[in-house]
Image 1 (cartoon, rainbow over the protein chains, first blue to last red):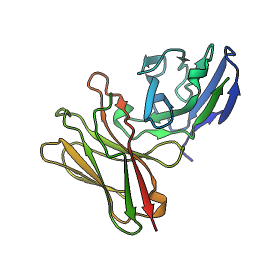
Image 2: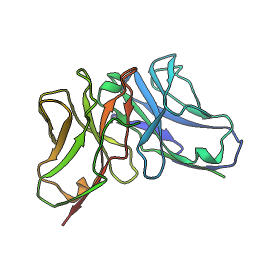
Image 3: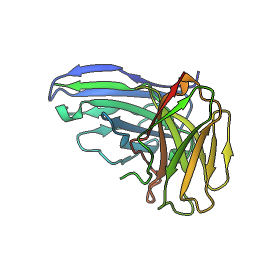
Length: 113
Length: 110
């Protein structure tokens, strides 16, 4: 089944403790992206990747890092999480970049205390 | 900032057509209009996109005005499972990334 998976789905952590949210897709898509969603708002893009080893900042990249060492995986790294990074995070992938149909993962709900 | 304007919420009776409007008056000539929906807090789901011709797929129809400044997403026979937030999106110029607004919360009533 074609899908985007994220792990963990839920995470409660403390300020300053490094964490990684994994994202993996099995559709051989070149484009992958991370978004965050806060109550009452639409999605805001954090980082995106047009292909392996190519990443770019989105609208809200501060406090986040990403890497794209292989096509299927696009982990999101929070080196020193803070409470304002408490949010719902989505990973997405697409065969045609942002212009094409994006497939979204189920989301990761992160709480930083 | 989002480049689209949508109503905050709408209701529709089950079995009727749901018509969701979107204004995108600053759209440029080569930008597509995209529609996604999000059911509760699940990952968004792609619905349809178009440039200037009307588009139809198994989920919905997209009607784009001739001047391309607005569009309407039509769900022809709404069901309770269509209750969701619907996002109308136009990409940014510079790098074609999608800018998401707050969307329209569509409630389908029995």
